[in-house]
Image (tube, rainbow, N blue to C red):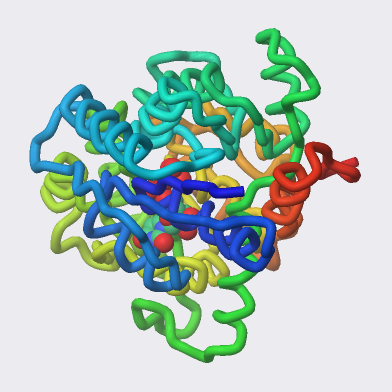
Length: 370
Ligand code: UDP
């Protein structure tokens, strides 16, 4: 079976790498990888870390490009490739423009689509934008729907997708995390910033499009307030290179004592920092899934989440971008000294094997969580 795996952004590289390796280990499959380079600077180090060789690069990103401009390039580039090369199936992951548009290109050419991380829903098409629409649209054109959790399966069933096309596998991001965690534990490398004895560490990521502008400003003011009130607290904020995020972070937080604005961290450095953090504040989807693997509770800097399992399990809490609410809830978590004991509801490290099993046999003996 000849498969084309399409990767556009950092999280897709992380979440598809374990699957590409599992497929390549299996002689039943021949796997090619195409990148759209939707993220260019963020993507390359991830591909290198996971040893992912890309057979084609469509170079779709341009500075200041619109979503329509990006979609146009992905659609045309993929269509051209699908005409030149024969593939039995095309694999996409998640909710990016790359994932949706590549799935659409395959659908138009009659190539069966496998959607990894299907069925996530925030319930609000505008939040996150455009990801909520992208993930729904990718599901519409997919043949196999690989839902990470039972909750995602239920979302798909409610929308009328037939149960025989839905497979609950766990999230492949947790497979990647297990790979990286082993490496991080073997290598005794220091954290990206030096901390004095007794210091406490907050890890922050914030880059969602709907927070651009006032939302990011409010998050910034909350972080300043927290470091003012807690002299032992250091904030490590690897800043997304998106110009809107970089400008807001630098303007609000640049030069502030104990607020460390860093370039994006390598995946192992990010995992190492997550494992050491006393507090995690994020608007990232992947980080909501990863934090509980290390027993960390997360404050989610958004109004909605498509990952309600963490909320139900008490590993995550929605705090939005309200300054006072962020400060209050961060202080409540900082007051809980001692090891945190959250448990991951998102995966067990075997999602990729389950996906391979479905692709090979058409069925899944033991769904995740059963
Ligand atoms: N990540 C990383 N370095 C960083 C920040 C994040 O390696 O400086 C990883 C993180 O471990 C997670 C992924 O990037 O797996 C999340 O990516 P992002 O927040 O861009 O996307 P989302 O998860 O929101 O789709």
